[in-house]
Image (cartoon, rainbow over all chains, first blue to last red):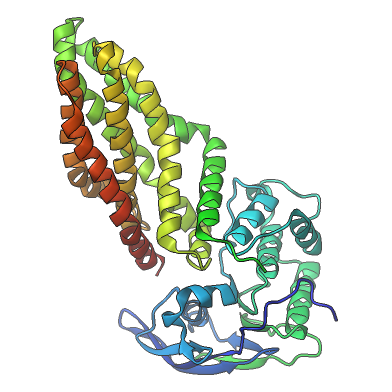
Length: 215
Length: 227
């Protein structure tokens, strides 16, 4: 199956996390979490509310600094190569990361424009791909599900080899959920990798996500 | 794939922030209206004696500009923090200090520049002679740029705090005092027919220092606030 957009995989060799420990005040949120994620693989992070799924994803993204342990990419800790590491992944957080005053197209043009040169046709294609063709209105006037789709379009357009997705199915209807599964499948087929925190296992045909259970 | 250079990233950030500002006219106009109203109150309260007005003009213009600049500062990073775009900016792979600088420039273009452009009119209402109007423009131009730059530090440090605006004032006002002293002095000298060159050069030096030192400090503060 052809990837939606060409992936820049030449410099991606998978990631590993070693004995990550993270504390919030007196509470140890992550206790020695380790995993490896290679090209073409999906790692599903699951666990009850408050088990540290989002925290783990934020640590991997570099938004949080763990007390112990580190994330490695290309044999080096990611904190030593922050800018290159940021270019290697695309992050979908709990919040959609969209400006409500800007249109769907303007949001994409800015967010992707910070990473790479983007053509108008690519923006149109991405909006159509997530079912938002012809809905170039202020993001603040879109429904929660439509904003989630728009955020997903940003992930796809970033052309990053690793996707870090925090509850990607939130606010989506059935069609939206299958759209997420579809784009993840294509991403993995193209040799990308995905780290997904979700309460339900992602339905990805031809790929069996490995599981990382947080207590 | 052609990666975006930091100059292009800065241009995009300025463009985005201007676009958002122009879609929120009320917020943009607030500091400007405040500036005009405060400076208008003085002639009304003190009476039409031109010598008295001329005596307080430099201080009035500067204090009003300082307080007006504070009004918009709180919002510099708050909306980005609330809607998650700050996180995306942190992860964009662009040097954060440069994006911060771009945001400070956009903030000045929206809140500082209109105030500067209006200042000769306000200065005239305070009986500032026409010969001193250029100094008013230059002094407030440099000064408001310094305030935007210093204010970014306060805005980043108070991000996520409930009563951030109060703390923001307490943080920024002491830092802005040297600019206030030299800025007001420049206008005062010009009003009395002396050369304002010395204070203006000091203001320019302060701006150069602020533009160099504040972006990395703001970037570090934003990274801490994002946690």
